[in-house]
Amino acid sequence: MINLKKTYLLLLLLAFIGFGCTQNKTDKSKIEDACNKFMAGRIALEEKGDSSLLQSVTEDSLFKFIMLNEQYIKLLNAPVSSPDLHIYPQKVEIQGNCATCLMSGMEYYQIHLCRYGNDWKVNGENGRRITPEMFVKVLQQIADQKIFTKERPARDSVFVIVNAFFTTVKQFFKDQRTDSLQQLCSDASVSFIKRLYAYAKIRAGLKPLLEEMEKPNYLSADVKFENDKAVYKFYDEETTILLQRTEHAYIITGFNGTESRYINEVQINQHYTDLLRALKLIRPKQYRDKAFK
Image 1 (cartoon, one colour):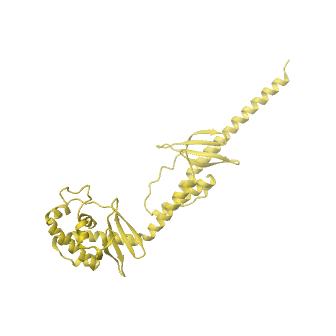
Image 2 (spheres, rainbow, N blue to C red):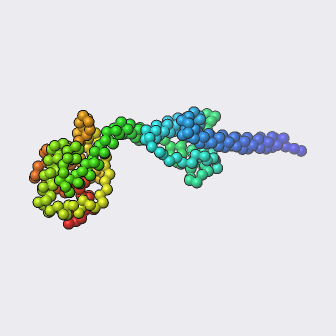
């Protein structure tokens, strides 16, 4: 005789297991679909500037962060290498209301998702979730880049003038002609350079300096602005060139934080090599010939 109670319980258990498998399969399909749309959405954003598909499958904070990064990239106005976005889901692992999806491709890339109502949405990548600190950082990058972009014409102008100055002052120490210097420098700066040249002749003769001047001398620098003044600062050094904006262009007005008119003979004697470095006539101390003083 068939035990109807046991049979009913067995059928109920099988139905529950079957429902669980079907539900899991449905979730897996939804997750894979969300991941495919996420990648397609990123492609659409990159190629067409269309964010609608990406927004439909991305959790709000991650979507906002992606759009802020997109804003920053546009501000850079420079070629940016992109990862391969034409990839697809390979392996899905579900843990309750959240899941991870390993994507295909040459590099390891994992997408994190969670259930939001009846939908699965992407909320992180490669073990990283969006934090308030990440928002602060990208917002600061955007603010800094806006300032850089606004100052770029003036910055480029300063670089052109300073590079021309380095060439001109080097030539002056060879032939003592000042006509080109006068176009780039204030009268006080031209006077200071003449006095520095005269002191170099007395200190050790020009031969050691002229030999040092011909050595490879690479330089990186940045420019900071304040009203109508600019400071050209050598990277990883305290060496600076001061500039003043005139009606037509910037001119060089000082070195190492001091206006040229205030650099006297005592300072030239005490800071001789530092001042030569500001004119880029000698290399940084660590690369300079030890005999040169």
